[in-house]
Length: 108
Image (cartoon, rainbow, N blue to C red; front, side, top):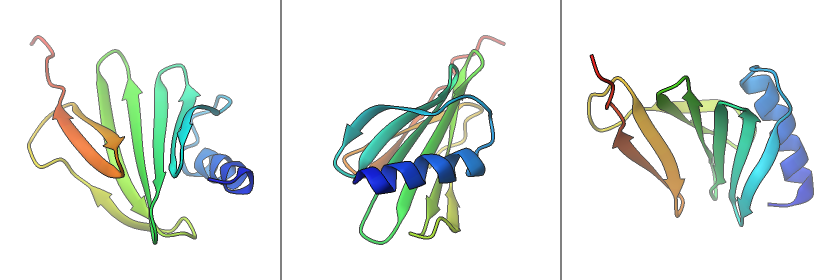
């Protein structure tokens, strides 16, 4: 992604996810970015040909994710859900795909 898109995406993400903190890019590879929003929250962003995938993961202490798809104007198109039932679903973006993991290892 270009520097202009990066600056716009950090600004837009700060508005979309108002958690406070100073967003910092911790990984960047082509159309993929991983952004630390706070000490306990990260965003993974993947820019596809016509949409943008966003995975937000928050850990407190157990990690859980939500995933959304936006168009190029940052309008929400769809909220994605894991293909299984879990209290703590964990998602990552791998090779332009959202991969879900059941992170429900909490002791009840």
